[in-house]
Length: 168
Image (cartoon, rainbow, N blue to C red):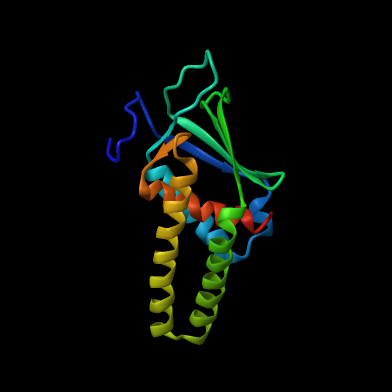
């Protein structure tokens, strides 16, 4: 594995589950982002919880239940048989500015597409990539010492944080 991740039998996510009714309240653009992030995570990811419950085998693959509870982003990591393995809660505050910027970019992208402005779409896409990079760095920083992930996984998880934050 790359990126200095711990070597376990299988350090990856087999599934990511968001709030059950999340897709009912999403705009089509956010639903498309959510679906793409889930597909990309299913295809490739590196994810290793570093703090696990005593007496529970730590090897993966893992199922991640990602939710917002009480103003906190919760990474509820489980085995595929639903045995709880680790739970990590992060304050949403550090993500708020990036999430707000992400929503503005999504809205701007929709408007540019409607207006058929390809030059504007390209500029917005470049901005989104930069924002995703910044968001991925923040996700990795906030999970440091708790869950080891690579940069690509962090980018996809940042997308899901933005989607979840729309409901918070």
